[in-house]
Image (cartoon, rainbow, N blue to C red; front, side):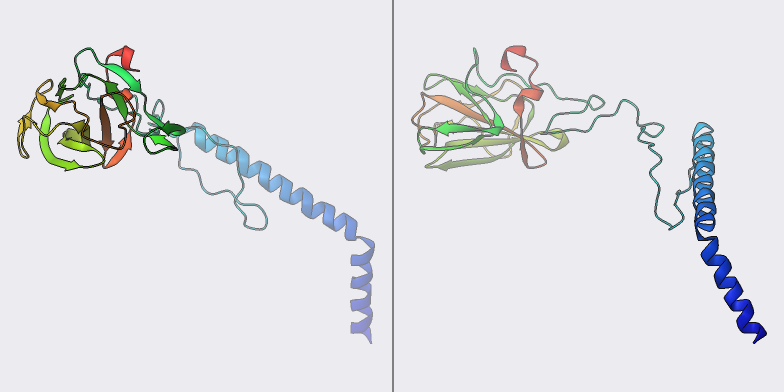
Length: 229
C-alpha cells in the first residue's frame, strides 16, 4: 500500500512539473551545444584536429566551418578539362599557318551539323583551309594511330606527355608520318582534304581535337595565341 502511494506521488510530481522538467532538459542541451561550439572554435584557432560535434540525439552538428583546410588555399578544381592554376600547362602551336576558326569547340551547346542534318555538341575546333594546306603537330609527341574512314577521312592521333593526345581529322591519304614516329612541334603530319563525310557540307577544313586521359577537352585552354580563344 505504501509502495503504491509513493508511485502515485511520483507520477503526480512528474505531471505537475512536466513543463519545468522539459525546459531544464532543453536548457542543458543548448548549453551543451554552446560549449561544444566554443571548444571547437578554440581548437580550430589553435590548429588542432576537431572532434565530430553531435547533438543530444548523436546527430552531427554543422558548425558552419566551410573554410579550406591548411594547405588548400588557392587551389582550384579543374572543370571541363581546364587546367588548374597550380599545374604546369603545355602550350600548343597552331596546327595550320594562318589558322582561321570555322567552328568553335562547344561541349555545352548544340551546334547544327549541315551534313548529318542534326544538332549536336562539337567537341573539337574546325580550322578552314584550302585543300592541300599542310597540317602541323601542335606539340611534340609520338604518332600512335593513323586511320582512314568514310566519315573522318584520314585521321592522325599523337600521344603527348601528361596523358594528353591530339587528333587531326579530314586529312588526305598522303600523310608524311607513320605510326611510331616521334614528331616535334610544327612538324608536318599531312594535308587538308575533303575525304571525310561527317562535315562535308562545310568548306574544306581541319577538324582538331584534344584529349586528356582519353576524354575530349577544350583545346583553347592550351593555345597561347589569344586569337584562338
